[in-house]
Length: 153
Length: 153
DNA sequence: CGGATGTCAGTCGGACTGATATAA
DNA sequence: CTTATATCAGTCTGACTGACATCC
Image 1 (tube, each protein chain N blue to C red):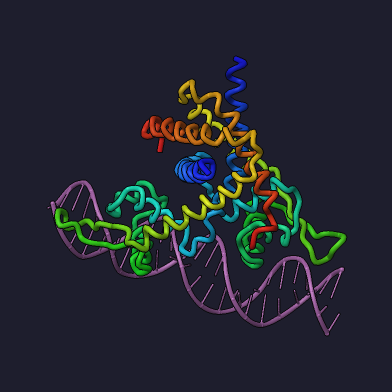
Image 2: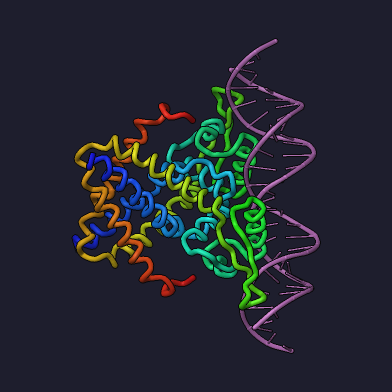
């Protein structure tokens, strides 16, 4: 049960540190220009490739009409293209433009650059823990995928 | 210079994993009920204790009128109290109520609980990397504090 | 016609800018 | 008077709900 206590303790500390670190990390990519929701849509399209509106509905935390409007904005901004699905007349196919891909890439580059500056200032003793942190985060994501669908909502 | 390449590579991978993991992590606390900005204000008051509006202005990413209105909402919701500073007639002192503190606590508990579920599903090989990840995150925060003020904006 | 996909209309919260009141 | 602190007024972006059009 010492192990139980330790596991809970670790979750507490990890959560606390993640919250604090995130407040810094999320700003590394710089100001968004486009809103959070729009950014999230662009990001999701980047990860998934061409998708329909209803595919995005599952991940984006907004409702259909808001999503529709958001996509219209993104199209107007030249970040996304809409085309009709020849297989299904009801569906639109959404896809990032080159500018949309560039936006994602630029933000990620800024994050990397900011993170690099921080890493350079790390004490030598911490350098080794970076790669284990990377695999830890990946493992936590795997663990999350395993629980998806079994959780309510 | 092999070390240079590795450092950049690590920053890239860490940034990518953090972005992906965050999309899960930020949802662990559940829906906000109150908006993002309001939540951020509550969180900041929790971390700093009693503050004035202009203290919050530095950290919150909104302007004075929006901050003022947001605080009014929080007061109406019973999460924050305003009182005048007897030392300075211009200033309001903002402070979390018990309900406000409870909100922060509840959200953190949900994060911890969600994280614990994920940790329980980790392969044994990753269990050891949690505590090193905690110290890494803390070290990265320290590194960030060192660079604050030297960066533009 | 029934279910899925997407849009239209009206409303509302919450941000912004610019002007303004009050205290130091 | 000038600066700091906070609010008021008007506008705008982007979310929501509910009704509706369109295609399978």
